[in-house]
Length: 158
Image (cartoon, rainbow, N blue to C red; front, side, top):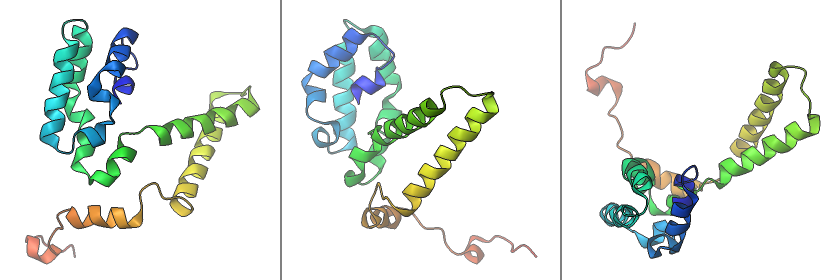
């Protein structure tokens, strides 16, 4: 995750983070609570500050985005902070566009990519589950439910 966050920055900083103990374990397993994760992220920022102040600032500013996955059940964490699904989709698009190689215009490229995206969406909706139904049920159970419309004091549309 650290190297993905720092993908467009100084490669030495990414290398430095790879070597640090904070990132070697696996983020989700290393920090079981949000407070511990914030503390650990602060340690990383402090470690980066002397050599890579710009990267430290970037990491510090991205704290909320980096830790968003922790609002979900722990069994979802690995899949939420991973970009594997997106990388796979981009490889599929790349492979399909390489077959054609030359497009007559931009619209034809958009049609092909759109068709690939629709096909992938249908495949994930019907055949694959990235997060299990049981795990999603747990997430839905934790979500606050709105009371029935009449109890909210809203007027029914006639």
